[in-house]
Image (cartoon, rainbow, N blue to C red; front, side, top):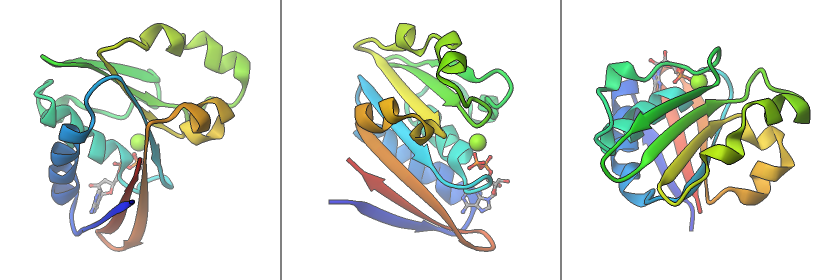
Length: 141
Ligand SMILES: Nc1ncnc2c1ncn2[C@@H]1O[C@H](COP(=O)(O)OP(=O)(O)O)[C@@H](O)[C@H]1O
Ligand SMILES: [Mg+2]
């Protein structure tokens, strides 16, 4: 069953991410879907904090570096942003296969662009901008 939440601020989305972390025991491939500004990276801040892997402020958008790594006691988290990645060849240069392991949690923005990730994903989180600071966040697994 999908779980649906509504948040009224970025802080509430961070808090939700913190709770979601408990449902993401490794290995997991998580797709984060939603338009620019929907709150995908904000949710990742909470997930990373929930795993106890670094302070919230350390999480920034990986739009330019594409892959950010956070080491937690029970998992290694990889936050990946494929917004600017369009071809199979570009995807391959990222070496995402090398990141998959029994202790890895991959948190992928714009991963639904690639059929492979739509097929392989364990969890999908859809974020919708309702109005102002309101977001609807739906978790499918
Ligand atoms: N309820 C909310 N949840 C998440 N972000 C929110 C919310 N309300 C306002 N914001 C703001 O919206 C922006 C979301 O940006 P970001 O998380 O980088 O989005 P995305 O990664 O989906 O492009 C941030 O500036 C954040 O402060
Ligand atoms: Mg983002």
